[in-house]
Amino acid sequence: MGKCGEGYCQICGEYKKLSFEHVPPRSAYNDTPVAAVQMPIGSVESLSSDLDGPPMTMYLNKKGAGACTLCIDCNNLTGGSYGRYFVSAAKQIHDAVYSKSGSAVPKDNHLQIPLHDIVPARILKQVVAMFASIYSSSGNLFAENHRELSDYLLNVNARGWAGEHAFFMYFQKAGYARLISNVYVTREEPSLELLNKSGSVIDLGRDTISEFAFGFLGYIWAHGESIDIVRSSSHSFLDITDWRKEQEKRDLIISLPALTTFPPQIPLTYAQ
Picture 1 (cartoon, rainbow, N blue to C red):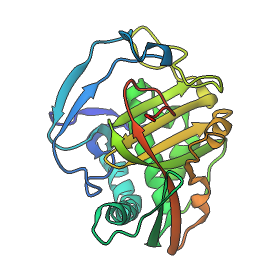
Picture 2 (picture 1 turned 90 degrees about the vertical axis):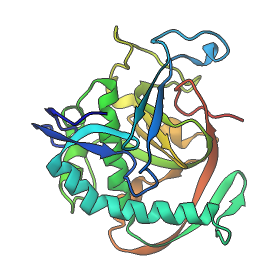
Picture 3 (picture 1 turned 60 degrees about the horizontal axis):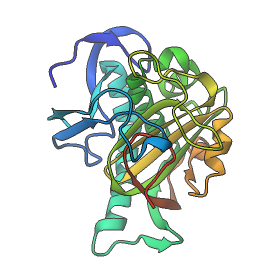
Picture 4 (picture 1 turned 135 degrees about the vertical axis):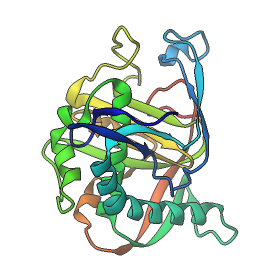
């Protein structure tokens, strides 16, 4: 990938020189070249057949997973104020699962993982910042369509946002990286409802779901009526929405569902 040019920053919305934003942060095991595959988009019915949409393409990103999505100021703000707390938690989760002396305890398809000296509110803000970056994949501007969340990120001391938004986590035990931005799902069946002519997903406003998974962690952002769909899922995702209230360092035991992602890119669907 070449150098970043000018464009609209996904967080502040200003037209500036952009910088490369690692998603997740570089220090959270995202510091090696990534071979990215653009998978066709399809519905549940087409899992075993040819999928409509653009053909599969592949490219190499030597910097790791990410893109030119944030201006330098917003990149520095999120990295310095939120990213380092996120990295601390990610490393603890990684060690709990993968080290020989790991403390993760399997229970009912979940992993019980103790975390120490974390600041939940700052971790949540980094998760929101990552969704701001991947928002550009749908051809939309996060700062324009979700100004309440942009303001939440730009104010380090902000403890919440206006509107209905919820955020969730899971452990990605195997499978492909996943990047899904702004799709509408129904209770009957997760599917992509509307595509524009270029094949990217149309922003359907308050009732959409976005999902991102890379390495060993996955994240979900739901808003509007979609929040209830995620919360009622049989997967029992870890709801981190109220972490916005947890501003001080603390110890915490989290329970992450262990899930396997697979193509095509359909939210809330996982291998058995």
